[in-house]
Image: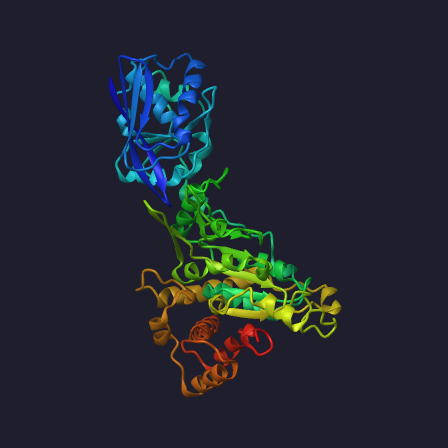
Length: 511
């Protein structure tokens, strides 16, 4: 008897429906075709044990299973439940007239229980697009899949629940989630608040500008000056995600298997990989490609602490994603693109010893050591960072102040207002939402300068020997400063402040 059941494969962040054809005939054998990987080939052992422990059996006949399209590689253990249901129907142990109206996915334990899968949200979106009636999946993944309206999503704990449903022995209620309510779940009081930061007013100003325009920023300062503390507080002043951004972010984390109990991700991600991270872990890839840290940071913040400690080749692979806001992984038989629109926040010591330019500490690094240390960060990478700012240690008088600093909630209000101005400015551009995303053409259009501003910028370019890309960065940052002031035009004082945020371009830093 031939039976067709349906599963799904995830490539990149998109799903493809897989037709599982099960044919049982005279003879003995278990033949699985359609480019399955080892995890799928081993499924026969899990299925046999799970069925036996729940009163069913793997038929002692010739079982042929084809996973179509046959030229598309399938991977992972999430097809166990799909194959098990197909075998039971094909062998006549159960009847299921409507099985072709459902997507069925889940990894089986030997007792018939189900283990979570990856990419549940992408699979649910595809199932709805293709007109499937419902989606059976492990109960651990039910919240993320239920985000998709118009699709019956059933969270399953044991294979017998699916069997009894198709046999008409029981009914299952689809899991329902209020997507809007999940989306509106925000923290009124962030865990890390700028109100707790003593002093550092100029750095807070930089953080506000970076958040308002979506600019990349690097903090340079000695150990203990507060670089990491400040970076961790940046998400608390970023504007809330839109529903579209929340769905995009949730989909990526779903594919990576990073979603636990939560359904929709309503908070912007903050990722902080260790400096020993490899290029694959940072940008994604591998034998079975998975999103890397830059994609997991999509619509959020990627924090690289102690930037020069990262391997140079690891940092260099970020150059293109920082420009294109997506990363493409190419292999011989396929190409996968992951979104990677993130804010890069980096920190570094000014020298190997950490105290270069500190008047209260001796210079412990030779010029050769300094050059070797700073050369780990290439000029092209620094050009892609809009704001360079020096962080100095907080004086004792500031540390002992009892007065509360301005809270993240108050700063965030100004950031949101500036972002609203930018949204109106770029409403006719599909892929542009804030100033950091502007290309050369838009910079010329929206950052027009008067004569005095132009002369000021020209002098700075000549004196600091800035690149053309640095020129664009200054204009973008100046545009954001103007937006925070609700100024329609960019003036010389905006340009002047933006020029100050190019510390690493000054003489004495990089040669």
